[in-house]
Image (cartoon, rainbow, N blue to C red; front, side):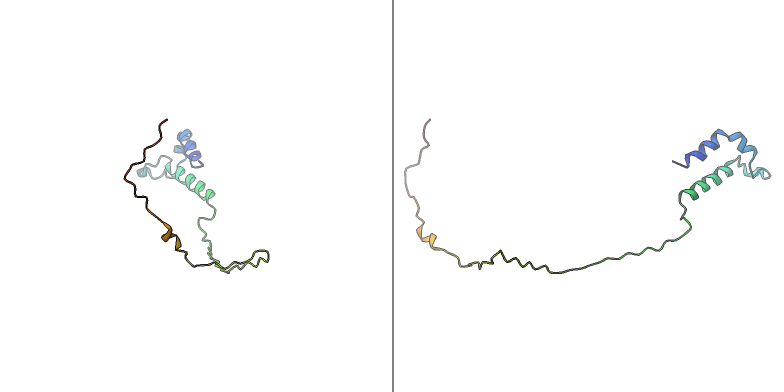
Length: 107
């Protein structure tokens, strides 16, 4: 938003800035005060970014830490899981072989 102020100042005071142009002795440039606008925009950009000419040292660290957490809870008993598969239900299964179809109840 700040660069708008020098541009507005240039547009409003165009006649005065054109008379005070620093390149008045070189008319072939036909500057008409635009050099003043460029210098004002450069000042504004310098004010916006005070660290523009300076380089900053940037460090990046990744901290990785891994620890296996073992909970020792005395009130929880560890139970042994029985892995034996019970397959006796297969012998108890029987098919219903009926020729009659089952009809739904009537309401």
